[in-house]
Length: 484
Ligand code: ADP
Ligand code: GLC
Image (tube, rainbow, N blue to C red; front, side, top):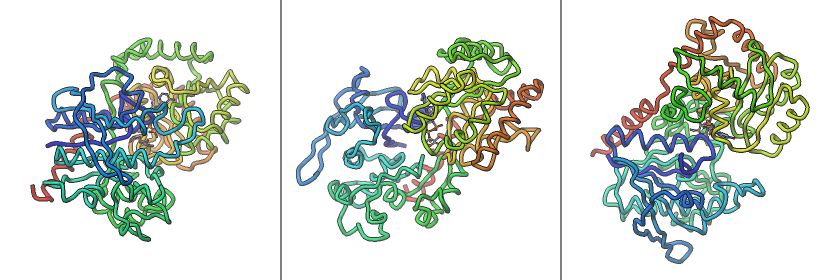
């Protein structure tokens, strides 16, 4: 099976959020299971500067804005069955940021043009290489399935089956319709309620949902949540019409990168049978965070994008009362300016309780996962969430809002004493959050129970193999359905 995977970020080359972890690992897992995978990424300047052995792999050309665009491809063979290909277009990708301008912290205004161009080049790669499956991630590649159906179909000897994975329905990439026409979508397809139109604008993700053979989300619960109400983000109606082709496949995690027994970024390693190294990690984390916490006082970690999605308004509303409890917070994140201010204010106000690092820091993320006792994710919505899985593997018990993938991966130990793996609260409000922090404090003091819950959490199977197997089954099913 030959798979063309298309994403805007993939670890270890370029990472903004969890999409990178998944888009980076899944192709590797699929290749290990015998598929041949080419992972197509934009040729960001930062990636080109990393010095990987990319080699020229020819050019693709296509009509663009009344001229012929010619784009160089660069390719690297990684391991058996796995290549990474870059679309080398300096005008679109030869700049500092991935989605946002690092100075203004705002999204680049021409993001729709950049990713429409990338997608158009991707469609040409599909024409040239004829994969069996085209697997696109999120809005950035979501135009490709439609392009294969209506822009280049006459040049495809055999139509690949197409799968769109929605990592976050809230980011749809809306644009002026001209952006879509410039990459070859016919004007006739832009009409109210049609495949390309969304309240008068173009919409990449809508086109992807419309044209893909199957749509996946990154957890089962999220696949249901987006079919109605607020989390449907205006596309719930369309998603309901496609419900037969929509399914949730829970993300896996890269257990070679996230393994407390081998993680080279930790001051000490440990495993489920011997947690002494975790104590060292805790002490080191407290030292680096300039915090003091006796053993019975739990350290609560937070790592992530500082965005509305992550429930930081709920955390802000709770912070005053949390500061009065016997807990410490170590927080790492970057994102919206208002939350940078909030975090700085907290750290200045109660440096004995809140330690904050603003920025992207992979090593610190690992050290918090290992050194904290609990890990807080009060998300308003969470398509999957990876950090709660990382934290469980590191014996750091998650405290999560029960939504999306958080609900699918964390069992509340107060509700399910026999097999709970963390703590989960339902309402997105300060009282519910504080209630669970009280539970965490009690659990922390009950050493035998805490050890048992840690043991369960650390031995959960969140492996990438499980996820990749489900994708292979889906691809095989679609290929059979198509009749090949
Ligand atoms: P999302 O994709 O919505 O941001 P996930 O939980 O799926 O949330 O994935 C976030 C990923 O990004 C995790 O691997 C997390 O460790 C990482 N991450 C987020 N913010 C930071 C940061 N400031 N520094 C280091 N890693 C971060
Ligand atoms: C998105 C979601 C997150 C998910 C990640 C990887 O960024 O916000 O919940 O874990 O994608 O699928």
